[in-house]
Image 1 (tube, rainbow, N blue to C red):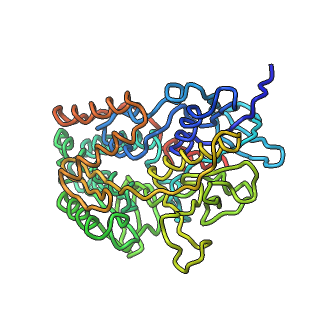
Image 2 (image 1 turned 180 degrees about the vertical axis):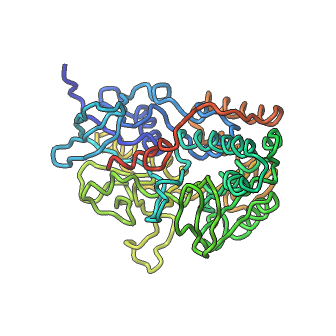
Image 3 (image 1 turned 90 degrees about the vertical axis):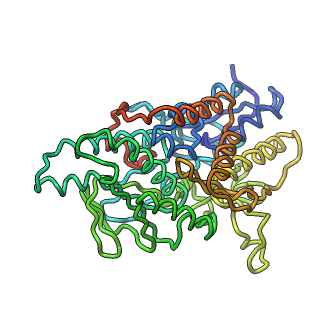
Amino acid sequence: MTDARPKVLVVGGGFAGFHALRRLQRVLPPDAAELVLISPTDYLLYTPLLPEVASGTIEPRHVAVSFRQALPSIRTVLGHVTDVDLEQRTVTVRPPEHGAPPHAEHWDRLVLVPGSVTRQFDIPGLRENAHGIRTVTEAQFLRDHLLAQLDLADGLPDVPESYRERRERLTVVAVGAGYTGTETVAQLQRWIHHVASRWDRVRPHDVRWLLIDIASSVLPELGQRLGDAAMAALQRRGVDVRLGVTVESATDRAVTLTDGSTVPTRTLIWGAGVTANPLVGTLGLELERGRLVVDAQLRVAGAEHVWSAGDAAAVPDLTQQAPDGDPGSRPVTPPTAQHAQRQGYTLARNVAASLGHGRPHAYRHHDLGLVADLGGRDAVAKPLGIPLTGLVAKAVTRAYHLYAMPLTANRVRVATDWLLASVLPVQAVQLSGIRSDDALISTAEHTDIY
């Protein structure tokens, strides 16, 4: 039996897609449209807490929000969209199962929210040796990899011939002093500091941490004052922060920096920003800095009945003034979970309006502020423009994450993880057995299929 209802097809199960569908299933009558989600996973991943997943503070499944639990009225199709036919109104879906043939899905309304992937550059050795932290696979691999390096370094004989290898295994280089890089280094450094003393020949101070960025400050999005506070907290723990430099080349045993220095290491963490999912570059549509051009109602330029938002779209920021008075040069919203979630609400209203339910609205949202958890009692936050540090910032940071987590069950599990981490010994066991090749950015984030 053919479903006569118009089909609303949402490509991507990140914050924008999830919240758009969640709102659509509430505001649309059951007979108004068939709602379909295409996603490579059956869950929304709460990515801001991945550094704590990597450090073992939070269990991976606790930051994964089940689509089938949260979106019971939605048909979920697992797979990657590899092609969009705007004339025939179909998308090509590649199933996650190896060797399974692709299939087409028809749409009457299309929402393109495939999100973003880790930004990479054409640096020799980067793709073969760097690991990101935007997926559960990458976070779990990084945790097990660091434990393996401690094991292997501890097992080396205490002779001069082993000193270089031990130094390589006990040195961590992280690129990117924005949220991902800074929070990851802060969380992992604190975790390793607490567990390293359990090895025979390794002590916490033997593990060397290096955070580098071409920028001139740490966490520049939070301003100079909070950036300096975060940098001071890292340096107090022994993290070597180098600004104004980046990676020139990388091998599996060393990283060469643009200042000419070479750092022996077996661990290169890459957190130098994000870029729109490669899918958007294959559509033949207008782009702005790699993101789809949309208007204030999130309609994609040059495509009928197509909307986009989140990290894949250059959404005009109506709360900001255009620098030269030209509305066409207005700044766009930054690629944050906060904007993506609220753009999802606007997507839902505008898609519903196109089906005759309600009126369309322009997206307008004043940023509520940003937060960064540095592990332990350290955090920096800027809610509503008010700079905070220390325990107050920590409380605000955790409260915000619990508020932003979509399901109560996930909130309770995450809060319980934090409580247990505060009273129980830190865990240090390897579980996942993820291969290094499977955790490379191109593989874990599936950028190699485009």
